[in-house]
Length: 438
Ligand code: UDX
Image (cartoon, rainbow, N blue to C red):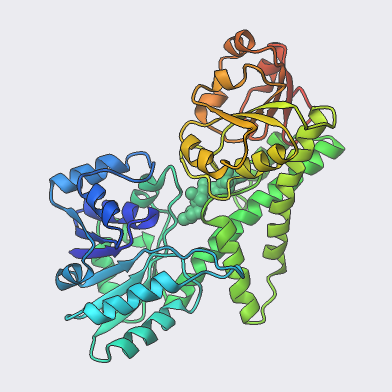
């Protein structure tokens, strides 16, 4: 099947590459000429494990190509995925201008029938909006609208695509159902869930809101454990063993970040508000996650004797989670900003996100960056772990002791073995339990 994917951002590129891998002929379209030229040579603009190999193989096998010419792609593809960005507008709603611009261009440039599928995360009702716009722009065009939201996680996106829990297809007619069955024929049929378009659009927002709620819930339980005495690791494990709850997304931490959760929960609240529906639970998740970062800074201050100014902090981790170079809404960046504003001196490190963080924090001169995380700890008063990179969880404590005199560790991801850390002579602070043991 010939498939056009419009937008080679994160979702578009991963989806396009994976469609090619499962045997389709894919044309990726973007109006960023330099991106297209790089991609045509197999140069990938983002860090995502495994993606580069898939794109290179697909280029070699001529299963994928990249162009800035939408019309040339539409001439040979009957299925068009819209995968452009839906950034957050000033009022928190999703900015649909890129999606609608692409829909209009599809209408203007299509000479044959099209199935137009949104992969971008779009608010409920966008399918109808696109449909009206396409009809207004080109009343002669034969087309159907569908929604196929993406549930990829950064860092494991290829595996998420190839082994999905479910594939949601929001459709408006029987013919679209057949096309979806053809697109996803390599996957077990029961994975394909058909709904109407508006429900499919809502499923994505509802899923992300639920996961964000789960994280905020466990973060607040961690606070309770710390205060009344209790251990979040045991609590989380036991809760997760209840099959009705499940053990995923129950790891406490510095708060959720990334390009999806913070943006999507604002967007769903916005849709609800516009329709006079009160999503009070999701609203409180936003507050809880905002307070989380303030709480983390308070924790740091307490450990440093109530004073942040002039304190030297080795900051391990800048990405919003491990296995990505993405710093969007990263709690590490937000915590770093507050610490820097309060006069701390930060020695920062990350496995992939240093260049992005340098740009983001360029206004500050009290931060320096280290590629070797041991080096970052050298003159520190506190070693602060904010991102759960495997390299940090496996840190060689003997080496740390040789490099630095610092003996204080605050682990905001609970990735270290408390006993080992304490037995090595460190003061160990973590989330949701008594200092020194977990
Ligand atoms: C998320 C959704 O999981 C994915 O389905 C959707 O397509 C895009 O948004 P992603 O943003 O890549 O994916 O990251 P995810 O792994 O879901 O983590 C989001 C945030 O939650 C991160 O900041 C992470 O550190 C945090 N998190 C996650 C926790 O704090 N605790 C957990 O137990 C899990």
